[in-house]
Length: 365
Ligand code: FAD
Ligand code: A2P
Image 1: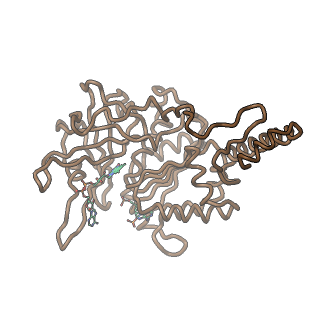
Image 2 (image 1 turned 180 degrees about the vertical axis):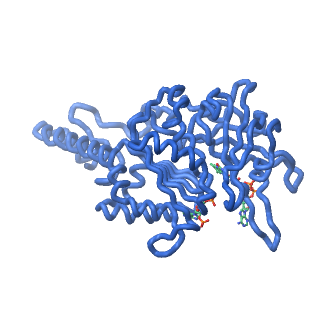
Image 3 (image 1 turned 90 degrees about the vertical axis):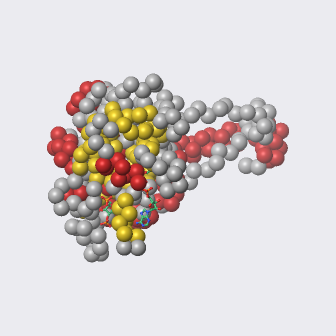
């Protein structure tokens, strides 16, 4: 309703019931959308005047300051100019015989920092590789998703673990090794490493123990998911964190070969212990074919499971996490669009609503 119309209406007492009715209508409409994000568009909040209140001044009057989201989550305790020096405690391959490439699980001791570098599940840390770049300057930081829970793999609360794929590509007949990923895959227990962070609030888990968590990961995109799944299903972790996860978790994992599946035994074990709470669906791109005869990707698995996935997404307790190759985003979007329309939903409307509701979490690189 236009502002001038509201003033005219407010002048006539006879119109009060109409206005009250309109306010109620907007309120019900807004509630319906926040409960049912798939069923309509989110509109910008309109200022509806009630007859007893003076009209709102245009926005020069300061509104209540929006509290920062997740104020207790640590951010940038250590900055690139003064990084923390962590000590490598473990560095081992996550791959089986016959796998493609090199992916390692690497753990750093964080104790001794003043203050200690603390983090929560879903954050990332920065690594500054040793040495200098071609211009003789220190290397820039690279970010890595944290693969451990805040209690660390040994539950003592003073380590952080990463899952790192060595970048290697061919250029003019030469094999080029990525600077930081090669540095990390080659370091040894006892080595000191410059660490910054933690950073990121995009991939945090909800606090609700009844939340449902859909995870879509390719390759090392499994790192944050490994932390979530440990937090949900690892017995000592559950004792420590006091977070009695009761919702449904569904992991879609994409890897080129079976031998490239990361943390697979752990996830299979959690599934056997918590069959009601965990589903684990793999897409092995170079061993399985999709329905069109192409490589099997996680988006093909999304389509195969469209009905169940969208029944979950219609529940407002459901969060979706996407992590890994940037290139998978269009494919996932396309699959979600098809899957949504098979349920009579419009993904291009639904996705921004999920994002706005803090239920759609993406970290790709
Ligand atoms: P660099 O030496 O920096 O080389 C990378 C550069 O090489 C590219 O910028 C590009 O210019 C070039 N290049 C790359 N591929 C090709 C190609 N095929 N042909 C020609 N040129 C090419 N990585 C992980 O392994 N695990 C993680 O958990 C992880 N988490 C991340 C989280 C976030 C939020 C972000 C932003 C990134 C994450 N990464 C992760 C990626 C990581 O930060 C590094 O980008 C990656 O390890 C490569 O760094 P590098 O120093 O080895 O490569
Ligand atoms: P492929 O490389 O066979 O094309 P990793 O990081 O260990 O290589 O795993 C990444 C996985 O993601 C691989 O199975 C890879 O398949 C797959 N992948 C590659 N491109 C896409 C894409 N656009 N969408 C989804 N998955 C992809």
